[in-house]
Structures are given as structure tokens and as C-alpha cells.
Image (cartoon, rainbow, N blue to C red; front, side, top):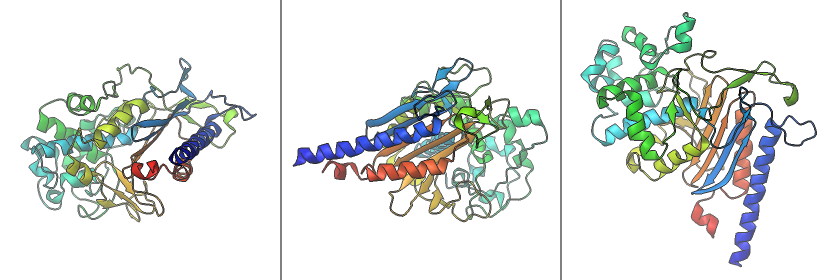
Length: 390
């Protein structure tokens, strides 16, 4: 009886993985007869239950320059999925009593004060937690009239405007407005508190402990092995075989050189090490992780921002949190910059990870996510592991 149950469950999972393969083959194949032929940009897809990799496949071209194919070792710019790494660095410092995320940003270090507006209300009411939960009220007022600045500005250049601010969009902690500069401010905090260059601190204290030894931040002159370029098409509604793609990343798209908000290049194989390290509390304490991955700011219904403004959605510290009816709690993030379109999700109750890293952005991500969620639920993979084994 038990053996038959296990076989039936295995078959159900195998069917689900075939359905997922068909889903992405339909997305990326340019063969008019329905046979796999992947000569356009595509994506890397990985599904993990517990520590078991159920699905790990690449589709399409990583780089037209050398015709390299996408696989689990291809490095993508994960864009805003980088934010969780910066948030975790700050949370690690809180664990170490080097910072209190619930105190004012003016209490972080005297070294940050020259970069902030004069200390007075309402600015003095902004906490570090507000920065990480997109609830600070700070406007994104980065100058956009200088194309060179827009294309090449660093984190420190991007926050230069903040010291001249004279107002906020709303009282800190009361609303949601997704902006990048507050995470660029974390770049400053990490450097000033640690006394190390941002990238060195992140490598030594975040990437290496997680086992992400190859993960790096973008630099214009850095050669990244197995690097995908981002691509866009001017004809997103055309048939796959007729689409013409052109490169769209650094030098073509805005604010590609900042790090703390979106500069990481990594692969799906590297990223699952991050998932495991967080899950097993190797980087930050279980208490701090729970706080970071719990609803802090309500996203749904925000009048200030449309990004991820969907039903039953909140933001924690570096992650979105979603509780859709009929599905378990999802902790996730998306990334969008240039031609890159990233989706990473973790279902804590089911110990289930879903990664879709794409170097094109002409497909509807949320139709894809909805299809994936339904397939995984039908296969029983959104059930807790102990229940799945019974």
C-alpha cells in the first residue's frame, strides 16, 4: 500500500515536471511544428523541493555574440532580487548588535549624516526598517536629464540628491512606494558600519557563507563567466520565429551600475545555495529571518505605486509576501532591468523553491507564475514535506 502510494505520487510529480517543460518550450521554441528549437533568448528554470532538484533546465540563447546556450550555470542580472541580499546584510548587523533597524536612520552612524537631509521631522522618523520595506516616504528624485548619469550612476552618485530633500511623499511607515534609492542608501550604511567596501563586505559575509562563491556584482570592466545579456524585441506580439532581439543592459538601460538595489549576477545553481543558507539560518538568525519574511508594508491598494500592487500582497524586508486564497504563503521577489525578467519564490511551509531567470521580457510573467502555481499545487508539491511522504 505504501509503495503504491509513493509510486503514484512520483508519477504525479513527473507529470507536473513534463507540464512545466511543455509550458516553457511553448514560451521559447521557434519551431513552427511544435518541436523544440531555441534560437532566441530564453530562460533557466529550476524547481526544488526540500533539497531535491525536481526540474533544472535552460532554454534559448544566453549571448548572441558566442551563441552560448542557457543552462543552470548561466549568470543573469537578477535585478531587484538583489535587494534581499542588501537587506540580509543589514539584518546580520542587527543580529550582531551593530545596528537597530527600528531606530532612526540618523542613529546608524555619524559617518552617514553628511549624506542625509538635515535631522528634523519627518526625516528623523524614518527607520532603517522603513528603508527595507519601501515605506520611508522618500521620493525617487534621482536626476534623469543627464543621459550619462542615468546609464552609469553608482549607488553613491544615486543618493546624492537625498541630502537636499525638503519633503516626503507620506509619513514614514504608513504607505508603500517601491523605490530603488532607499536600498542604495543601505549601500552607504553597510560601508560605513563595517568599514569595508560594500562589495568586499557582501562577498565575505554574505556570498561566501552561503556557498555562492562565483556570485558577483556588476562592474563595467568585469568579465563575468557564463554571462547572459539581456535582450528586448520591438515586436513582442510577433510569432517567436520572426522576432528580432537586440541587446538591452548596461549602456542601453538606466541605472544598471548600482549594486545594492539590483547589481547581482548569479545563476539558478548559485541561487539555490542562497535559499538553503537562509532556510537553514546560516546567514541570519531564525528570528530575524521571520521578521524579514513577514508582512510589514501592505502593497495591495497602494495609491503611490503599481509595482506588484496585486491582491493579498505585502512587503517585508527585501521580500514580497503573498497569501493567495487556496495557496500556501509565498515569499518571493521579481527583478526587471534591461531585458532581464526574474522571478524567485519560496514557499516556507512546503519547503518549495521556484526560480525562473529570463534574459528577455516579452512574456507575461504573471500568467506564467499562475500556470506554475497551479501545476505545482495539483502535483501536491505545495503540501508540507511530511504530509507529502504519507
